[in-house]
Structures are given as structure tokens and as C-alpha cells.
Length: 204
Image 1 (cartoon, rainbow, N blue to C red):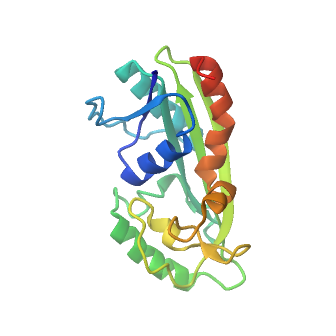
Image 2 (image 1 turned 180 degrees about the horizontal axis):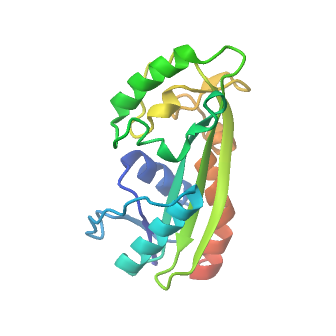
């Protein structure tokens, strides 16, 4: 069975992407599985640049077809911040707990009539020869005044991201499988890539 590398060290993201690819006839492997510990500095100016840079770097490094993504949360009232700096909003690679504490302050400062926010991502699929494909996914919601009681490891912002249409947090413990597929921004992007992956890897 052909292998497909998921290039992330975020265990929450690894679990989520692996789940979304579970119907493919490939063996999904992690960076740890293939013994790669290299870090790639994110220097791109867009989600697409970072996503493609990661996918092509780790595909060449591993010799395996690779999926990587880059994205963030964009808050309307803050002119789209933190966006690209979602994990480095505090000026360094912040922990989940640091970002949750920061968001507690931010959530109190947002006006009641302007709390709209988006999760946006670009997922890229690359071959070791450098050829790369990308797709976009997003979900719209709002920043809750009070966070979800449970922290989702690797996803600090989801504790504050509320989906008013279904009156639920964007939190895997709250969403059904159907709702995950309807509202997950990464799932939406990956679904667009799956036909390409199947064709390029001749696995359909």
C-alpha cells in the first residue's frame, strides 16, 4: 500500500487529517513514523505559501507524497488578526494555555455586534519532485464571550469559536460526524484534494 505523509507535529491536527483521509487506499504516516524531526520556519506571507513550502519540503525530505496545511483564525473586529500569526500572536510560539488566556481577554473586549470570525486554511499535496496542488477551506462563526469548558489540545481557538447556526462550539466533543464534515474548514479543503490524490497516486 502506498504511503502518504502528514507533515505536522501538532497531534490534534495529525489525528484530524488522518481521519479525513481514512477512506483513501493509502497508509497514512507521520513525521515521527518516518524519523523526520526537521523544523521548517514559516516565512511565507500567505497561508498558501506556507502550506506549499511545508508540503514540498517534507515530500523531498521523505521521498513520499505529502500533505501539509497552514491556516489560522481571523477576527473581523481585529482586521483579520491574528491570521498568519495565530500560533505566534504573542510574539513567540505560544502554548495552548497562553493563547486561551489571551483569548479570554480578547473575548471580553469585542463588541456584542461585531464578534464574527473565520477559520481559514490552505491544504497542499506535494510529490517529491516538487509538484504541488492546493485547496482552500473556511468556516464562519463568532467569538463566544465565555469559552468552552474543555480545552481541545492543539486547537486553543476552538474553545472560543461558536457556530450560531447550530448553537454549538467548533469542538469535536460537541459536533456529530455529520456536523464535523459540514463545518470543519480543513475537511472542506481536503475533500477538494482527494480526487487529485487518487488520480496522481493511481489509488482509486
